[in-house]
Length: 168
Image (cartoon, rainbow, N blue to C red; front, side, top):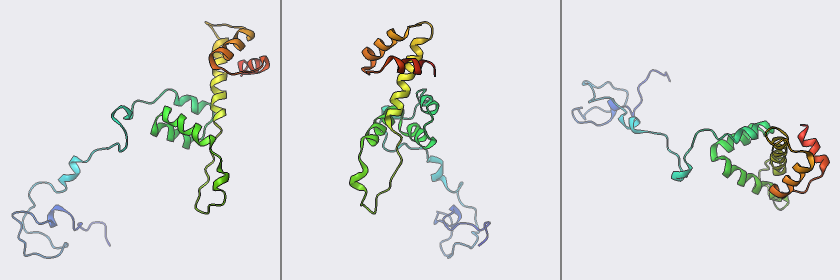
């Protein structure tokens, strides 16, 4: 079948006023020009965002996505984060990481997906927080940073963890 043939659903072959109806078959040429440009329904097609609320419409790139890239998250997960939004992605990621797949192990219809541990993101955020506190204008010492991490983040870590995170 050649690519230069006219489609049967083109405006020239659709029943339109002014075109004789006695003609049969989509490959015959019409004797008169069709009224107006064909395929006008395509002019009103536009991108839709199914399933998104008005306040969830895609916005400019979220700067927090850069953190996901910096921590080495695979591109597929970054693409998902871009698609559904950073906050929704973090919720889904934490939920997926907490699931136990053992109950699905015998199910022949299951698909296994490798989900990075959510702790990796939490650790990355903790380390960024520590590095921020060691840099100007804060310039805190390790003991002050340890206290801030425990108070602000509610995480109990050792002074060695603070030193290691600050040196990364």
